[in-house]
Amino acid sequence: MSKKRLILVELNEFNEDLLRKASKDFNFRNIKKLLKMQKSETISPENKEHFGLDPWVQWVSIHTGCPNEIHKIDHLADVEKLKYPQIWETLGDRGFSSGIWGAMNSSRNNAKGCCFFLPDPWTYYESALPSEINDFLSLPRYFSKNYLSFSLFKLLSKFLRMMRFLIFEVNIFYLYKEIFYSLSCVFRIGINDNLLFSLFDLISTKVFVKYKRKFDPNLTIIFLNCLAHTQHKEWSKNNLNIHMEITLKTVDRILGIIFEELEDKDPLLVLNGLGQKNVDGDNYHIYRQNDPKIFLKNLEIKFIHLEQCMTNESHVTFDNDSDLQNAFSLLKEASINGENLFFVERDKKDLKKIFFQLNYYKAIRKDENFLVNKKKYKFYKYFSLLARRTGAHTPFGVAFYKNLDIKKVLYNHEISKSIINYFS
Image (cartoon, rainbow, N blue to C red; front, side):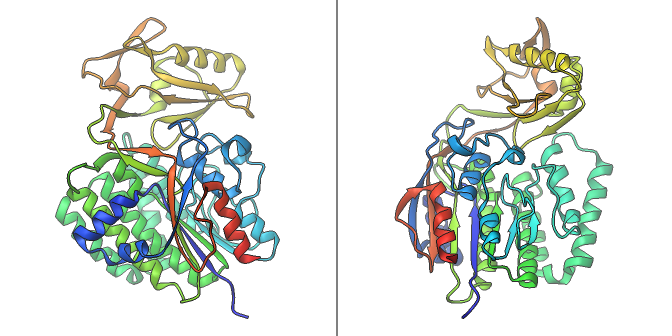
C-alpha cells in the first residue's frame, strides 16, 4: 500500500474573482490549473473584522475543527492557551507524520511525528524544528514587528543569519531561479513591503519543499500571506497595478513549485481560510505604531515586556497590578477627535498582561493631536499611515482541491474533518 500524503496550502484570504481576472489578463498557467480543480465554499461563523473575523482566529478554527466561540483564541500569539488539538496533533496520535511551515497562530505542542515546524513570525515563544530553521526565522520575526523602527545593526545581523542558513543548510544554488527572479522584480519596481513579503513567500516555499523531500511526512502544511497583504493595500477596482501583478505572478510561481511536488494520486487542498472583498475607495485608513515601547514610555507607563503583533496591536506584560491598572486606564481613555483611540482588554489567563489595539480608522490630519490624561500628543510622532485599505475581510471563503472528498458548502472549521477522514 502506497504512503498517504496530503499537501495543504493556506493561501491566506485570496479572492477567487481576483485570481480569475489575473489568470485571464496575464495567462498565469498555474493559477489557471488551480481554478480548474474541484471547489467548495466555506463560511466563518464570525462576521466582524477585528473581533473574530481575522486570520489569527480563523486559522485556529481550521486547525482545531472548533469555531472561535469554542477555542476562544482571539489574538495573535494567544495559541499557548489553546485547549484543543490541532490537525497535526490528532494525526500524530494516530501514527501519521507531519511538517508544518508558517501556519498562522499555531503551535507544535510536541506533536508526535512532527518532522519539521516553522512558526509564524508573530508567535514569539514558539521555536522552529529542527533548530537550524531558527536562523531562517530570525529575520522575518524581527522585520515583521519592527519595520517602521528597526535597528540597522540588528537587521544586518539577522539577514546574515538567514544567509548562513540558505548557504550551508539549504544550498544557495538550489535557489538560483528564485534569486534571478527576485532580482528582476527589484530592477522592475524597486524594493517595497509588498515585494519583500512576496519574495519571502517564494524563497520560503522552496525551503519548505527541501524539508518536505528530506522528511517525506504524511501531512504537510504551508502558509502564505503575500497576496492577503497586497489585497489590503494595492487592490484597485479598475485594474491590476504593477504591485498586484508582481504579487500574483509570484503566487503563480509558488503554485508551480508545489504542483511539481505532487504525484498523480496525492491530495492537494488550497484554501483561503476567509476571504477578502474589494473596498477600494472607502475612507478606511490603517495605522501602525512606529515603536510601541517608546510610545508607552513617553506616557510614563511602566512595563517589563512588549510584543508587537501583525498590524497595530500589542501584548504588554507588567511587573505588578498597579502598573497594569495605570496602563489600562490611560490607554482606555486615550482619544482622538472625541473617539476612543484604542481597544484595550485584560488577558483572560495572565493577570499581568493586557492587549491593546489601535481602533481608529478615519483619516487623520498631519497636525492632529490625541489626548491621554488631558495631555496632547502629536499623532504622527508615534504612529504612521500604512495604507488606505483596499481589501476587507469577508466570512465567505473557498477551497480548491483534488483527490479529496469535501462537502460543497461547509463552515471553515469543518475542513479539518475532511483531512482527518482522508487519513482514516
